[in-house]
Length: 131
Image 1 (cartoon, rainbow, N blue to C red):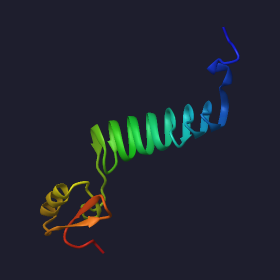
Image 2: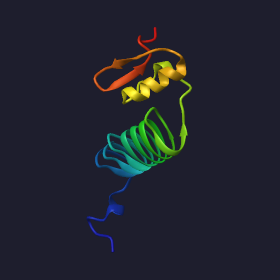
Image 3: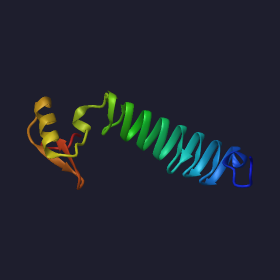
Image 4: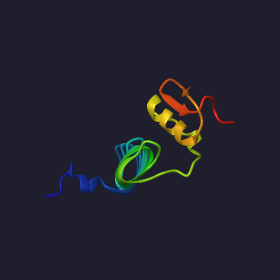
């Protein structure tokens, strides 16, 4: 039975706003096949914290997730956790690590000495920042 509060009756082709539902949803907590926004949830999700099958976000969770901190089956990003992790081809000297120990291990692999801080939370290999 369809009522006034039925989710299916509120779905639009393109929806924009707070918690919009549509085939394409854009906004804060958008829900749809393609979702773009702050916390998008959909088959394809693009945003800050995304959940769905395919994600492009700072923090992404899904089957395929690309971003800064990702979780899923196939992941890409500097802090990704997944069954298959795609590593960046970026020069490893430019990468920052959450622990001093990880930066020291990378410095040893690169053949440089020491580490240096990057901001308040991260460490980079080698005594000096690359130019």
